[in-house]
Length: 606
Image 1 (tube, rainbow, N blue to C red):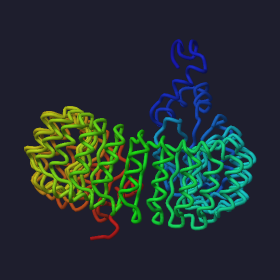
Image 2: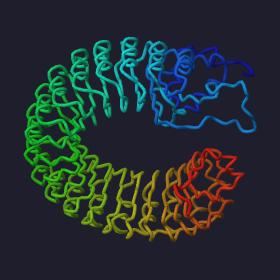
Image 3: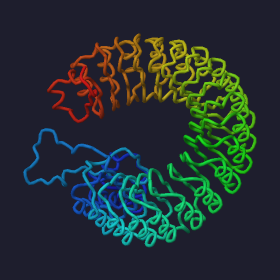
Image 4: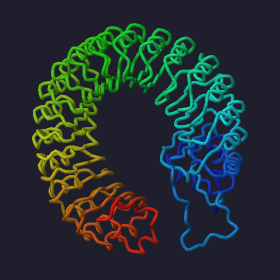
């Protein structure tokens, strides 16, 4: 540093580390580590979380991480992650350079986003042992689809990491001995995910509950064919403080869920996809689990409105309800929930074909704190029901409508007038919704930032002009709205300078004029989808590439006006570009050499 170094002279280590923890991106944190040796050391000390792919050299990789980041509390390893090794343009790799030294490691703070990883190969038991040796302070361990891990490796890490509070074993083929070791050694465990752990049986789960049943607060079980009601009976007996349970199994029946309902009376979150569970079990949940706040029921074919009546009577604190493909539920069940759960804030009804307008109207009249509503494939819900939501739910912030053929402009106008705090509106294939409803949204919902109108073919330019004049959008998707052209997108470009995501795919009337307007007005644009836009050419693409310097992704397949030259322009001009989706024949050899790792192709060549 030139001149007097005021920062290093005046600020203590603790304060600089706290500043590092508040940086919002890995790029910024890495940049700080290059300032000076002191900042490099402090930056490493401030890393609490690492997120990597399973490696073919687990010992070397983990020892390297442990030496550099001694305060790590959270380790995430995911074999699904796949990122190419970094390539230094203009330089050849030295013959003596090991793959490990070139491996890109993604190390994040607790507040960092879950966005990257490294090349994944295969984590083994020896790698788990190395994690246990290297990270003595480990509190959270996630091993996603690490299929080579066995009970021996799990036993090793359980013995070495006795402060473990959270363990995710999704897709790991571990056995009962490993899970029993976790129960015996990790007596502070609070969160456990056993989804797709096909090697487990009731023996392992029962042993686990003996050891850490008193601390366990969250448990997830899915696709474990050998886990039956016996396991849930053990959970009900020993896990008195359980707050969250997620079950997806065709082998669980009433007996197990009854035991959980009676034994885990502090349960707050319950997610069930159990085709053999009936009204008897759900009624017990309503009777015994009065603290329940979230209930999600998927693909239930053996229970009726009796279950929801019991939930409405007993679960007065219910805030979040999801009903998906529950064919025997009707308006009566939803009316019971509305009457008994006035604190409801989130409701999703998906494919429940017997729930109609009356049930939703009762929600509008009784649940005035509703903030998010999703209606998917609800053919019996009409304008009258949504109008009642508009009149009664003034705090609504998000509305999702998919394939609701009976909902039209009257309903959207009512929502616009009554729900002025609306921030997100997603409508897909609701063919009765047109300009009138969206114009009303633009005139009344000034806080709207996220709008999606996919394949609403009655929506045209007038609607977007109103949105551009009244809202400051950040996210817009008008894919398949074929009446929208240059005038509508121009209004968005001029009225929504904070727009970061735009999908205008399958707009046949959209051309280069709109692209020029976007390049002038939407300089924050990071993601754009132009696929199937036949009138956009290399000229329009060049406008975007020159002015929208933050652009990270661009999809442009089936755009006959875009050639290899246009693709090359995007690659060379957009320094932040991370992904380009295009036909393979439009990528020149020079472009491929320059940026092959960020180019994605269609599955088939056309």
